[in-house]
Image (cartoon, rainbow, N blue to C red; front, side):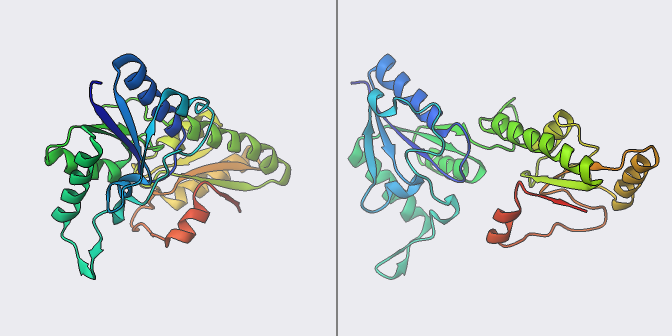
Length: 262
């Protein structure tokens, strides 16, 4: 045996998580003779009564087309918010408990699948001496020095397909239809799907927009006989002179990747 890797997934769901787990397990076990321990429910699986399971090549067979994550995931923001015997634990004590449990489990290094928040926690483990390999999981494709983050292409395909379906409805009913896609700080999904799906207006967080300019574009299309328009909006698109409006989590979940019409 040449060591043991712990692997976990954290944060929101994204396409490709199980495929990455499969790749790590097959490469580590089949090519390098290592053990892989799956840590369940994100970093939560390292706290208290640990939640882990040994993963072999047979355990990941058939995972490529399967969505979600076989290891489960949790909100990464609550990892350090803990109490013990009714007393709030310090941030350092939370990390040290997790690291101590890793030693008990024989885990030598971590492979962490996650986005900004999850990899931020992974950085804290790295700074405390734990070898960490971060795998960028974000459908927003907003990671510097990385051409494509896994999940982005699938999100792009779904958004483009939605635009294709909206076109015929908008044209049949002479509507201005708006497709909102994910992207609070980065407009890659909106930009790529908007171009691929033939949108007439694309609004992204990087370029504040004017509602008057949008209206002028719709009127200009109407003047030349195009009685419908398709607008793609990233969720973080910002109107000039205004501030972002953050809705509660329930509303945000219902609004993401949905559409309306005027």
